[in-house]
Image (cartoon, rainbow, N blue to C red):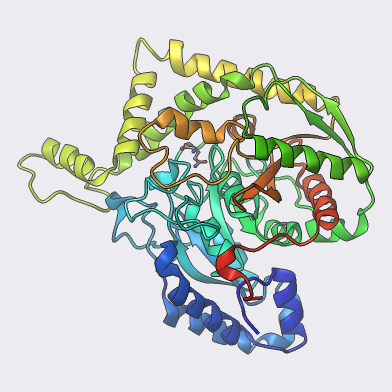
Length: 489
Ligand code: GLN
């Protein structure tokens, strides 16, 4: 049996039937990584000894696996999460060599329920980017076409699962960094409601927008990771005290509900024709399932990009002040004064795009400009939230393509930041409004590249999101595999 493309559900069934045990599965995944990742560059660190040691302790627990909902599930973790003993570079030279002294709550919860970390994966520096080309450790390539980007910033998380190097992975999403790469790699990606998952132990980018979420092959798998990882954490004051539904059980019990999907045609103007076609045929599938499509208006989404690019850099400029060559990571070799130590360490350690954002944010927050930029952006943010609140009086979900285009070529957008930023036009408003958004594959374009469909839910409406997308997934049938995996089962 070839391991790599199995879902959590399939691996659990295999363990239950004693077809294999965790060490065998983990060994196969580690082998896949060593054989396939040279081409992809998705892994920044693997520790086979540690990983196998952990798998062996699980082998001994196989008879009690029913108490561990993620028993023996290989997990890849974006390199902006802290996992005790593992590196956490956040894709930046400034953090190269940094070893985490503790574990992020999200990862800790998954490990406690049986997940096995197989490696730390590549990402854009400090999660800033949409193509993984801003990583200090080189770009990641898309398993569907090695000349193309996997999306970003969680490009390693998406490429690793798409290529069969992990069953599921974790990413962070500040403006689209889970949903857009999931879309470009043919996976399910969820950005939960702000506050649903603890941010403790992730490297902060823009704290009022950042959320942790899973990449998986199926909606059920995403639901399983979420039911284990979500919920209040005293170590993150913004995490919510709401109870966490048993998402996978709800998928079984509520499987016949129908929903109203809201579409704003004005918002969708300008998407690539293959994407538009595939989006419309997915709507037809929903109609056949008994869902109703209603036209809604989101008049302020046209300001989402400018709003995001004031708020996110402002928060980043403050969060990233700590990388000063004294507290963490990279320190210049050539400073003659403490001021020089700070400026050179930052100057040499931090990459171009991140510097650009720090400057933008510092400017927007400076006295005299604060009201005109940062404050104004927050007022517009509120208007965008209100657009969604109003839309949700008419529909259960707002839907859109996840990204206006499919995977683009490496280098295609690196010279033009605005072009790159436009990749996130459908995902940014969701973070600004704090809502849950799920991307799932809905088709292939003429080049055989995956297209993503996004459902945006009400606050803490993850259970309904899973239900609707699970129903769609069953109507759609199993999604294609990248050609590098064809015939690998
Ligand atoms: N592409 C967006 C940015 O560069 C979003 C990134 C993210 O969600 N982390 O900021």
